[in-house]
Length: 186
Ligand code: G1P
Image 1 (cartoon, protein in one colour):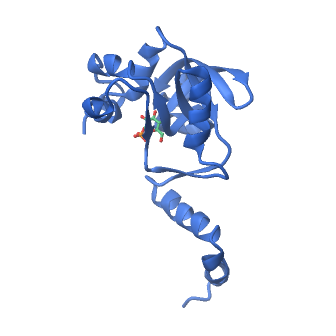
Image 2 (cartoon, protein in one colour):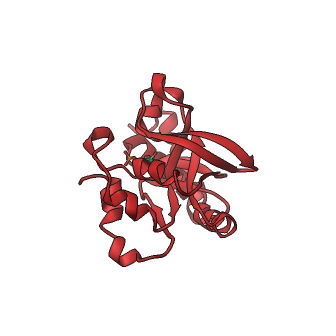
């Protein structure tokens, strides 16, 4: 309840002194290759923390951790600054963190000292921002479609998209969707 940063900090004894992944289950991603496995590959090369990122509507920056970053190579950004839930007029860009992270255990040092940030919560973004003073942090622009399952419409979209990927469900579901679209239910 104290925020994402606090939730992660609570897992410190289970994680120990090793890099670890954080997955926010309300961010569901449809992709050919699992985003986290792509990020593990990048981690193995850079040996530094990395978060999934994507562009969001400029009007919606106050729902995300937002980055200032430089492109390093295809799909990889070097993060220079990050801020949790900035108003559109204060946002350094429209590049947002999405709920996949690989973090070095050093993050616990900063979560330990974390102050209450945006929305009064202990924010992972603030701890990552502090971590950047001593270790680089990267962003991974993943390939795929992300669904915000914390939003009612996003949750329904995810159900439809994932179901349509399944050959055993696709045809029946498509027929139904067309029927609904043409108002033939009542
Ligand atoms: C959390 C993070 C935020 C990130 C978002 C992605 O926010 O704090 O930095 O951009 O997940 O979904 P929440 O959705 O918990 O408000």
